Amino acid sequence: MVVVFALALVLMLSMAGLLVDSGMAEVARQDAQAAADTSAMAAAKAISLGTSGTTAAQTLGATNGFPTSTTDCSGNTISGVVVNSPPLTGPNAGVSGYVEVIAQRAYHTAFSGIVGQGCWMVSARAVASINSSAV
Image (tube, rainbow, N blue to C red; front, side, top):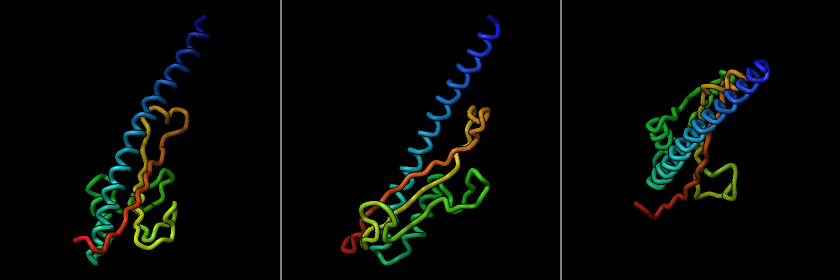
């Protein structure tokens, strides 16, 4: 009976840990989406004014917790905010007049590391239209 209880307890704690980690990862993904959205709008505005959209997006991304340079789960250095004008993916891929921003960073789990999932990549993508007539 003790063995069955111990196995059930481990399983229940693992599931509770997975639920906590997945909930926190979703919050981090929502933060990434907010950073990508605002950075895409800042990039589109900067491009429409004739300045660097990349600088505007990366500055705002860093303010929202997504630095220009970050480390992925494998320890490699990656861009925390990637700016593509025109977008490389999605329905506006290759279409001028749009800017794509991808915000990404590593999320280090609290409980899932016990089962070998110590880090998850969190990212979000946003596309904004560049309106050259707006000031």
